[in-house]
Image 1 (tube, helix red, strand yellow):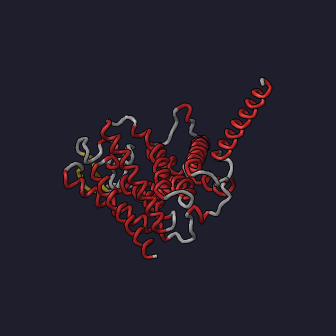
Image 2 (image 1 turned 45 degrees about the vertical axis):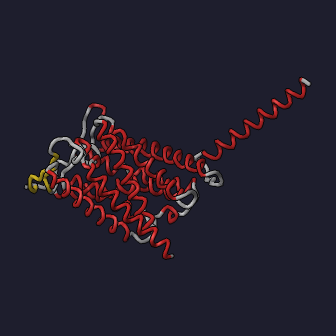
Image 3 (image 1 turned 180 degrees about the vertical axis):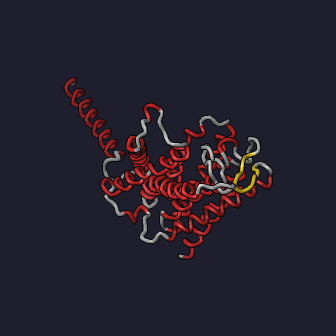
Amino acid sequence: MNKSITLNQKEASQKSTGIVKTFLKNISPFNNKTDMPAVLLVIKKLLAFALCYCLGIFLAEGLIIGILFACGKNFLQGEMFSDEVMSWIALVGVIVLLAVSVLYWKLIEKRKLSEMGVTKSISGWFIGAGVGVLLIIVIVSAIMVTGAIRFDGFSADINIKMFLLMFGGYVIQGAAEEFLCRGLVFGALKDKVPVPVAVGAGALVFVLPHMATLADAEPMFVILGVLNLVAVSCLFSFITLRTKSIWAACGLHSLWNFALECVCGLTVSGSEGASTSVINMHSVGENLLNGGKYGIEASAVTLIIVTAVSGIILYTIKKEGREA
């Protein structure tokens, strides 16, 4: 009797161990296994994002430190370039994130870049860029009408060289974030799980890295900031679906940030505006219209407009699907 009980316990233990091993193998980001329940696949892709993001940030920091040393700057002793140059170096440095996400997709996922949305034609980038510029014009103008943002005129002395360098930096930065969020996560999930789940997963990995800049904001701006990040992430995902390419999201992301900081001179995700911008603008007070210190990305006006545009794009996607 005792021997029988011992054998049953051993079998149960082995079965439990087998279940745990299978679970860990399924969610491990170090293999390309996809034959599993949707919830496990989502967890797997979230872990893949965490792996690539952490590794990419670590390597990017190393690259920036290497650049400083190569230029004769000892960061350990506080030797740095100007804030504007350091901002540009930080933007360019995230090219490592882009490289890590592509390498992971090719070496671990063993999938074609076209499955990530990286099409040969980059015309979608210009479509996204146009949407980004138009959105900034509409949103900033709407907030200006309320008096929550003030126009102080055009800059008399613009550093053209730095302006162009920042444009290039934001092209890289926007693409790096989109290759991670819209490519590595959303792109991997959209054909394997229900699209709303894939969109939600893409929004989650988009929001989390931005939480650090929201940490010091007042609760109302934190709530609006998160809602805006979710809305913007959905917009990026919908425009990716609509154009069947990741380039539109890259263009929209890059031009949104560039136009906001280097054209309007306003805050981008809580960071200080560029020291050189085409237009001089500033927020009047801190309120729900201008997003306070975090900027228009924590504005109720932005949330309404971005949600409306996302809804329009989603409607066209559904309409196209019905017609097809």
